[in-house]
Image 1 (cartoon, rainbow, N blue to C red):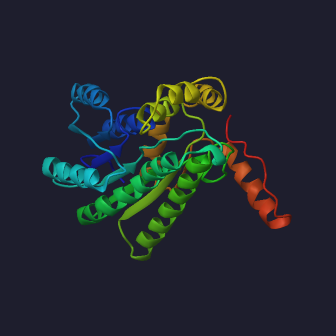
Image 2 (cartoon, helix red, strand yellow):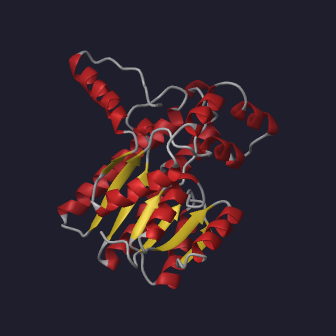
Length: 279
């Protein structure tokens, strides 16, 4: 699919992988709609793109709230008259043992990581189909293919996102639609998802912030992410995959061997392999 003059909406688009997508789509001639919780970050990215001649608007949006997605869709159509591409990219995660995860944190992670894509599809897919051609992508994770320890809520949501997008793509194919779907399953990417998750966590306390960003699992995960791929490279990968109409978008294809090992073990001796998701 050619990006020229297409209208692309990216949630979580003011930083990290979302910003990488925004920049890649813009370079290919797309008009951009940035949705994010960080109003100041949105303004910075909008200014950056407008300086290069890109047509772009931004809006604060909480993807866990269907009303926010409907407002975003209305603003998009009002400004650009159509929608062609949606990237459900906004996400959060807290590294915590399943038995220690508070129910309100379970609800928050599921609401953002799973209901965000559900809300996005519900609101935007009909509009994209009306446009006659387009694509919808959701950001899952390698954790959505193999569930690592300390990430039960995140892995549960991301597994569901993989299933959601696979079912959506099969339904689109069944009716010979010119709209297609894909799922991004990133490994280690140099983003601040851990710190941003702590900052945006509902009902957070100073102690919770210290616990999540101090010594232990959270710090180890963030340190691994810091050594990961550049989000701009991921944005390029997503753009090229959309052009080539790929469904699976893998940032670390070498780690697909871990998925294969798990499938083999499932068949041969029904054991659970270790989760090796970081490079």
